[in-house]
Each structure stands twice: as C-alpha cells, then as structure tokens.
Image (tube, rainbow, N blue to C red):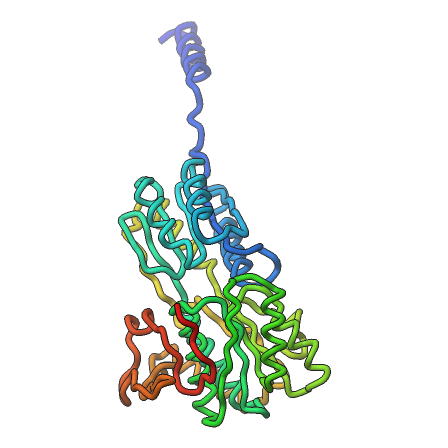
Length: 365
C-alpha cells in the first residue's frame, strides 16, 4: 500500500468511527420503596431507609432509588405500589405487613417487576418475602428487665395483634420470667403503627399502673421519651427501644433495644436480581444472620448482667437457646410447647395468644 492510500484508509476509518454512534451505558435500575410511616430519625421506617441508602451506596451507578413515605395500609398502598411499577421500577420493596395483599395483587399484574414484601407470607414467581427474628432480641431485653425491675411489672405498648407483634410480647415475657418468675407484662394496644400521641398516652398509663420497665412495638420514639421524662421522678424506671437505637431520646432511661439491620440484605438481593440469578426469597433472619442487633447497653446494666446477656446471645446464634423452648404455656394454662422441644417456625408464624405472665386480655379480632 502506498503512502497516499494508507492515509486515505486511515481517514476513511476515522470517518467511519466518527459516524458510528457510541453505545450508551445501561441506565441505572430503578428501585422503589413504600414506607408506612415518616422516615424521621429513628424507628421502623428509618431503619429500612438506612438500608436503602446503604444498598444504593454499595451499588453506586447501578441503581437509583425512590421512596414514598407515610403510605396507609389498604387501597392507597395498592395505588402507590402500582404507580412505582408503572413508572419503571424494576424492583419494589413494600415494608409493612398490611401491604401484603396489595403487593401480591400488583405483582400478578407486573410479571417483569420483582417485588419483596417485609413481614408477610404470600409469595409468587416475582414476589419474595423477608423478615427478621425480632423475638430473639426481645427475649434478651426481657432478661434484662426481669433482672432490673423493682416492681415486677413491665409495660408494653403495641400496635396490632398480628403474629409478629405477639412474638415480641411473648418473647419479652418469656425472657423476663426466665430470671424472675414473679414478673408480669401489661399490654396496651394503640391500633396504629405510628401515632406518637397515643403511644405516649399508653406509656404513661402503664407507668401509672406500676410498670418500671417499658417497651413498645410502635414506630415513634414517644415511649422512650415518656420513660426519660418520668425517670426523673423514678430512678428505677427504664425503657427498651425497638426498631432502632433511640438512646438520644432516652439517654438515661433506655437500657438497650432491639434494632433492625436491612442494608446487607437489600444489597445482596438487588445484586441477585440484577445478575439474573434470583430464584425466590423467603428469608427469616436473626442474630446469626446479622439482621438484628442489641443497641448499646446502658451503664446502669451491671457488668455481670452484660456478660450474661452476651453469653445468651451467643447461645441463640449457636442454636443452643431458643426463646420459645418448652415448656411454653399460654395465658389459659394450655401447653403450647412441651419440655425438651422448641416452637416451630410455623407455630411462631401463627401465634395468636399470650403466654403465662402477660396480665392483659387479648383483644378480639
């Protein structure tokens, strides 16, 4: 090839390259989250949002996320879930038990979108479920309460009598009575996941009834705040937070809490969907899986008790200690788990009764 032809060939190639459009990088995958309460700076929704942020940071450039907060359970939830799918979300996480039926319905209508529902049990080809064994942390909270109570009365502010909430109440009671057979737990239901006014009122009522250990299965910080205020009058009054560490709202009163960790799960499961390797999810993880932790223990907890709790947590992880190891007897005296056995996951998932030691009446559903 002579010099002239070589130059023309190069120029022609350059012209061809210049006229060929560059392939654009794949756009980030859209992921939607539906929250039942405001994000705030503590609580159930806050912990899920922390997980969302962790996942988005870990998959930087691969995904973009959007969340809708304060979505009521019911028809409005279906509208929001459907809108996220219509707007191009390839993955949708719905983070409240009451979204279950709506999530399942929308999943059927959008087979190319992958849905994940927290705390529910309905699954499908494109619908997975995930939950944490919160009751493991509740049991250890109960052990601390049983050791530190002076009145032998604990108060529990609860949202709705669904199995997940019942597990927490009963595990706390089991833990408390394992070290203090005289202990009892009193429950007030507020019929809301997030209602700071009702939560505070319920906490104050329980305190007025003699409870010196207070906890909650609701989303706000109101119970811990109420305990902090009343601790000034009663130095033996303490609280256990739930969902997240709320010690900044109860620096003196909060002894510890059961906290939820979602970031690693969100990162792992989204990676599987993006890689096309996801085949289904039905996850129920506890201490062993890193999905729950105890909040830092207050200095009011003795070194001896801290050591005992750490040992018990290690035994739960190793499968040597089960919060519902038999004998488990319900409030009416019926044996639910025989001595030498532990409650099955199926029975845990259907729990609809109080164990012995709960001094309140379960509302009719």
